[in-house]
Image (tube, rainbow, N blue to C red):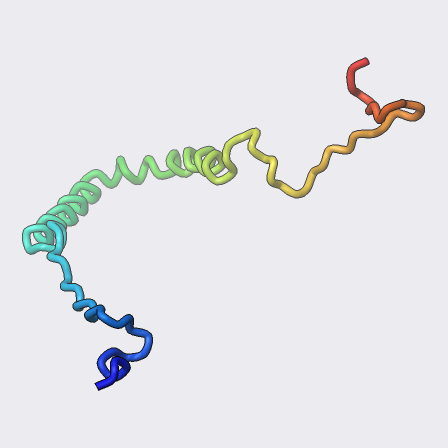
Length: 108
């Protein structure tokens, strides 16, 4: 038997194929107790919001107003960080009659 017949093309000689990995056991939230806990929390949240809907719905306009400055700060990076809006270049003008490449606006 030739070495090519034992190992398929592209498979390094002398190495066994890697075994299929076994799925890991799920965490707490995928277990039966976790699913019951999620169901209980969803039911509790429903009744809490249903019983206090006057309070929770009364806050919605204020949350909308509070969202505006928060979105502005997080989406735009706050004030002062507007350096990436286009290609603004600073042009330094050379003063007429200046020697040695001195530029206007620089110290004497």
